[in-house]
Amino acid sequence: MASVGKALEYGFVRRGRFKLGEVELGQVQTPAIDRLTENEPSTASTLGVSKARKDEMVKTGAISAHQYPDPVNGRVFRSPSGVTLQFMALPEGDTSPDGKHRKPIKSPSGVTLAFKDSTRPHTPQLKEGNGVAVFPNSKMVETHHPLQGLADAIEVVGSVRGIGWDWGKGLHVAPETRPLDRRGFILSTLSSTILAFLTLDFIESMLKVIPGFSPPGGGSIYFMDRPFSFLTHTFLGPWVKAHPYISTIITRYTVSTTITFFIGIAIIAGFSMCYGILTLFCVGLLGHNPQSWPPLFDSPWLTTSLGDFWGRRWHQTLRQTFFVFGGYPAEYVLKTLSRPLIGEKKAEYVGRIGLVLGTFTASGLFHGLSIYTMGKGGTDHTATVFFASQGVFVLLERVWKKVTGMRVDGIWGRIWAYSVVLFGIQYCMDGWTTRGLASGLIIPLSLSPTRLIIFPILLRILDH
Image (tube, rainbow, N blue to C red; front, side):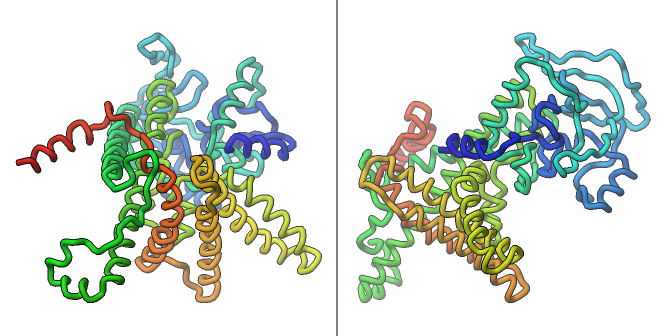
């Protein structure tokens, strides 16, 4: 469906999709992901910007004050196409000349991955392309390489967030917390990927213990039909016995909320694990710039509002897909219908409302499709209702800000976001689990540390 969305989008974009900095297709030979854009993806800190130039750009708003370090004397590692891959500072006073002898850095198989030389980082000149300020990493020349067009096509089809492309404008990219030197970046990514794998494996294994979740048939997250038995032996015992119905409701939703929370953690771990494997492959074997692979999530547990959660902290891999299937059409229809009635300016505002509602509704239909294609129980509209409601709540946050002058933020904003997401998504989650989502195999038994090591140890301890 994501590929269908891309096909529809390209059908409506007459001139094609451009790398930031291009005014004609094929002008930029380096991959879009290796270029410095307003999304702050790739070579920001490796190129270096002069102090005077930096101050000028901060003043004009082209960059933020903390975005790029002041240039220092150092060693630049470049790819064969000239893209700066890494910058290593040299000791104070070391004035290694800009040598003409470039030493190739090769992979074990003999493939040249990069060239190494000693130089001060070049101060790039700011240029304009498609109205966006960019730092060119290579000369703006037409390419005549027969495979360049194919390489660009593969990249634009494979790019899900739009980093380095004109359609990724406005995308939030999570700040990088890993070391930017290649070795440190790979080791940090490897450790986080292993942690994500272990987390996913543990949660999946624990879910299989829940009644009904082990067989392929699936089970409901609302399986608790009585209060916890141990509560009757505590100080809450008399109250539980006096209020059996309320106690059952509290127990049922406590369990369902806990399961929903941990399934959410498993989703984050699963996405992060797959993304980490891709990162290791592309940076470790293909020689991509580490900054071309920024984090997928931006600490979603630290969210302070729904707008913050869905627009910044959650992964943005299907952002453009939902724009194409729902946001853009709804924006166009509402703007077109309202323009004769309320004028151009107000129609723009109505169109933006349609963009939000249409995008979230498309997300709901997309997620609902996954329930339907599991082939059990027919259609289920809980996902559509949940995600469409998120668009309404996001708009309510904007209304709150307009009325009160204060945005939803802080601890109360966090409580609000957690409540809306965790309680609202439960019915959607139950639709998935009853059709076998939690019963499916993710980590095979032969690769599961939890089921091969942890569970046997726990069973042995319990036996004694």
